[in-house]
Image (cartoon, rainbow, N blue to C red; front, side, top):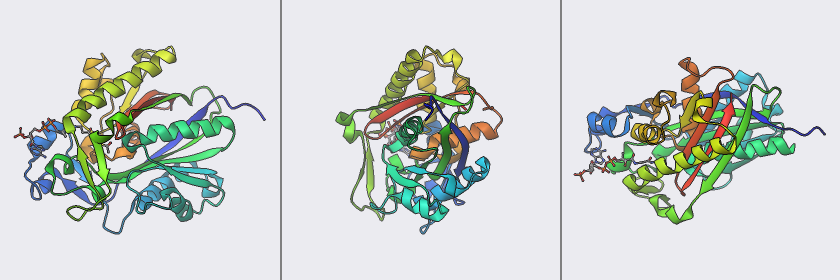
Length: 321
Ligand code: ACO
């Protein structure tokens, strides 16, 4: 068997539920206003799943678009990885339901949970499966229904999150122009308490979130900067070699500070959070999709993905798309 040197990422697609909740809509539920939310976060609206629409539904709808974009059938998929913090049920995995809904009968399927860093973690796992020959076509999905674990009475968190899914195929690189160059992952369980989705019901949601907003804000900038600088150095690259930075989409001020404090050109950062808010592990494929659709990201561009989430977990990836 030939040694596979690189995987590639292709077929980026996203799915957002139809229902839109604007900042003005939120102002009718909690004591907030559009100006506060836009100024402090950059978020303008978020999509919210219906009561009977679950993470596996969003994941499947995004995956179908990926299969169509790649012109491959579900039976060609041999591994499905879903990154989610918001499965409908604790067990079995969201990924096996997606397998069933797609009819991907030749796949093995499982979930990972690394909060907002989940897509980068999933990409790293998929890349390893391709390089080791354990899989040929990995369907990687980040999917969340954050609205179902949001405490809609807590204005400090309910304005921040939205629902959605993003997906891609990770397969063997067939040329040097489209490949996953590197991934790098980190975690620090000593900061477990900074963001927690508790396993208890509050105000009619299936769990409730507590977050030290300002601590997370500072951690996000430091962690993403650390992983970006490490991965670039380890791969003998600088920010000048990167066409687009794709940061986790939590807060526009975090992205701005990340760029300013590290001398990254701010106009290289893709920002899409105004449209969908923080969809946790789905934000990175959503931002890439937005960048492609707006004509910014082009075939063969060098992308630098970076994310930080609960755990804390964080990490980066360099991808020639
Ligand atoms: N509307 C109006 N006022 C509000 C709101 C709101 N929605 N929320 C808080 N406030 C008030 C506060 O009560 C406070 O009032 P006070 O000064 O009278 O006490 C004031 O606004 C300022 O509050 P801060 O918390 O200091 O506001 P800050 O500028 O830090 O912004 C925010 C808060 C947006 C949460 C910010 O800290 C942040 O983005 N943190 C990072 C969150 C994040 O990235 N999470 C991602 C990880 S999630 C995951 O992994 C699942």
